[in-house]
Image (cartoon, rainbow, N blue to C red; front, top):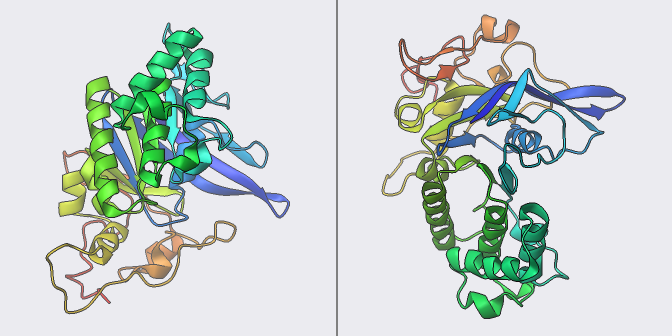
Length: 331
């Protein structure tokens, strides 16, 4: 359904272009959920916004060898319009802070109704009825009366449900969820994740789920892409990647993640910080922070190679498969 090949994004900085996403390849099948995980600043959100077509141009510049959904080319920029007889919009996106996605001066019903009239060509009366149905579907209590409320009259979790309803109003083939639960407490997070899983299944909708939290991603996706410094450094089925990570960055993320019910005598942290995109290190971008780094890592960007012989997924590392723990590289 979605195919992205060699996606690159640069921003004008100091009078020159600075590339922040480097040759990303990504695919999402019909009804498939795919994750992008990594630290803040790794390029996850920029990748999602580039696919959605909402990066400001300038200062951003987006190129790709191929970027299409259901045969529709997405490289023209701007939010893609419906095509092939599909009403609505092929891609929708939900964000970390739901309040910024809702206009505070409009009632939530008006926001939903306008989207339905504009994107799906509904009459006002039909759009109002559909808005109530959508709010009810995302479990807003008393949807018929609360449609007249303003965004500030809802809790953060309820606001995120409304944003999900707004995305569903567009009848997307693909939903991009960018850190949709980060601003919510743990209980509400679980409810939103369950809602997203249900909706994706019943609509056979593709989803890209973006997060820095590995545990959250594992709850929702079937395949995961680990991103560092604008590159996908490891990808594959989520169970395979989490159980047997091949890239030292993936290993480090998993070692650093807290696990419920597991006692540790010491904690693990990844030393240093992600590189500045305007002055990246030579060779592998992770080498200044990697305990397995050798001279080849400092000189040469690693090729993309299969994670497992005959298996699915990739790992971009000169030392793919070597263990931080086995090498005594934990800190």
